[in-house]
Length: 263
Image (tube, rainbow, N blue to C red; front, side, top):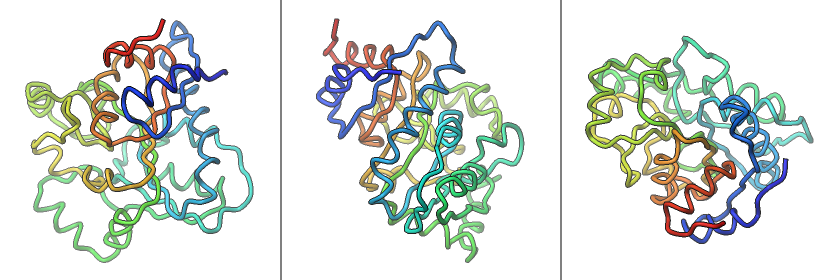
């Protein structure tokens, strides 16, 4: 599949991205095909950064799963550490769980990896704080402070279907939408400015704080499709992602809404 270099340059200029990877896509083939395409493009991009990378944080989701699935085993990367950026959920779609993904990726790249032995969502802020005090958990969480790169999917509009693997209530979802939630990054629901919503769900979530994410030098966000437009815009405008991997249709929409449309 070819890349659209004109769109890539346009997105870099319009949104101040370090790099953009835009795959030509036929969206009539459906979302599953799109996710596979984006995963392949992300897997092809990773060798550009991994040789010089000491630690790579990994999020979860369909596109990250497709990225890991598309990786081709290569030379051993003994210097690389993979770090889970979000806790596990333990039910449904386990192939997309962060701990499962870093294990699969670690085997392919022949590198070290660190599980995050935490549930993705704690029952309360107090319970999460207790978990974070555990020495074995701290060993992984402290690695968030020194990541060289991060790879994560950019989430779609806030809906029950998109958070089916986490015990979030309908009331919490309604609150997130009412307060301007446009999607999630590392599970954390953000608004159109890329700011994390001050809601109970976010406060009980065991994932890398977005303030720490913004300090990671290489921040690769992967996402595409109509339902992700607003969250992608929020993520790249706010600097949560400085590298975007997306499809041509999404790229054109992003440029049009930025006032830089290409024919």
